[in-house]
Amino acid sequence: MLAAFFGNDTAITIPTDSTVPDLAGLTRSFPDFSSALAEVVDVRVWSSIHFRYADVDARQLGITVASHVLANGLTPLNGKHTGQSK
Image 1 (spheres, rainbow, N blue to C red):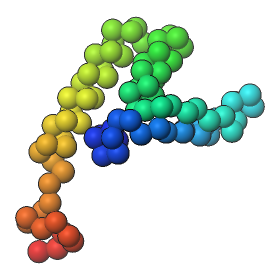
Image 2 (cartoon, rainbow, N blue to C red):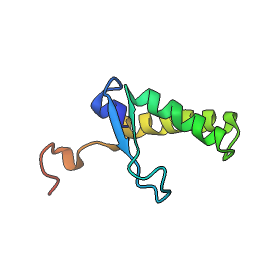
Image 3 (tube, rainbow, N blue to C red):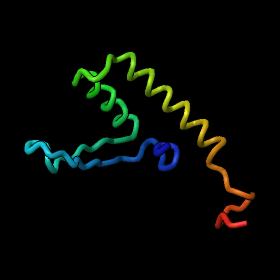
Image 4 (cartoon, rainbow, N blue to C red):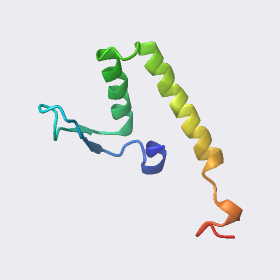
C-alpha cells in the first residue's frame, strides 16, 4: 500500500524502538519499498521464525490483498472526494 501511494522507488529510513542495548537507536535505510520487504522476508527466515516459502507466500498474499483494497476499498464515501459527510 505504501509503494502504491508513494511510489515503489521512494527511499525510506526506519528507526527501531528496540530495548536491546546493541540495537537501540538503530536505523535501517532502503532505496525502495521492495528492498525493505525483501529484507523482512530474509530476517524472518534467518531468525528461524518461518520457512522461506511461508514468508514468500505471505508477501504475495499481502500484495494481492493490498491491490484489492486499493482498487475496491479506498473509495470516497457518497461519491465525495473532499470530506466524507452526507
